[in-house]
Length: 515
Image (cartoon, rainbow, N blue to C red; front, side, top):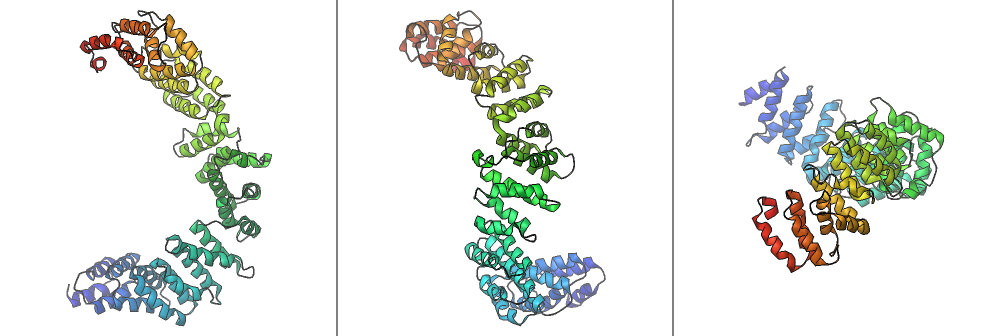
């Protein structure tokens, strides 16, 4: 593109022509003085697409001195807001040269220029920018101080100067005579860093209406035990946007102390707090964030009333993860509600509920869960049967031997049934040995006997030889699963007298038996 064509393109009323002209300046070999003049004009273009393209091209040409000088000059008094904001965005790519140039210029700028300089320094993400920012923290104009604190936080959050940034930000919180919104910038900056403040500091900020919401976030990260009841009390009185702010803090705190239920449940929730949490969790509106948070906080508090709400929420893909987290926090208290939910659900949902119940149950909840699940297994639905066998593997009692054995002959459930039966045998070896000893080689319990033989140490009968003799008979069973289990039992017996029978099985017609 010739110089005449370039000038015509930039003078065009068509924004797309101007945008293409800006892109042309990226080409290698372009006259940097000419490019700087056109690009600085394009940064202040009335069309946002042209400005965006200009920022991108300027950043690609960094750290060209011709451009840097012009960018810094835009911070001088002017009324083109788009130009100044675009210059701030572009300067971040100039790195150390931008920091050095701003260090020389910032002292002569007015308050607006100083604010823009602070924003530009933040975008460099360089620790050296903190040196230039420190004098801005002493400027009389509180807007400049707030902008400088925001920049300090940005540099700290990038990892380049986290400890120094925290020192600066926390220092401003200790100034009671400082403007409230400046202290707010400091507190927001600390939250951005994810740094921890002492509880005594946070507690003093919770009574300040300007700082309160940001103080909630700080309290959510605080490890002090008094932070939890203070946040709960704040939730009861919160209104408007404060509700979501304190809920977010409660969620963060509850996740940090999820393994310390004594701490989370040491302060009984008031009826008003319980009612508000349940109302939010069950609300059929678009405030998903509050619903999710209420589910989790109610679970952390151990509120059994949240269980049916969370169980129902499992069917909503938007709430699934949070409902599951709520139930996990609630633990065994959630089992009855999950069983009730599963009772009226389709097979896949019922199976999913069984798996959750299996993970949440304890010794007190297991009998109800297992009894209910065994009834559901009678339906014969494969996905429910497999999930039920998984539950019995963990929580089944002596009465479950017959239930599990009945599914050994089902090809879809046999593997899960063998796992469950082996687990039962190890928990209840006396009952398992009795079953194995009474099982006839040609009877229905033969498969169960072979599985038990793999789970318990030989001999199950009077001697290892008796075990081997019985298992050898099973190698002629018509069911390949029985023959395979019998071979595993022979291996577990660990006697050379079973070698002849195992060798005979090498001619079996089924590959998995031969293997």
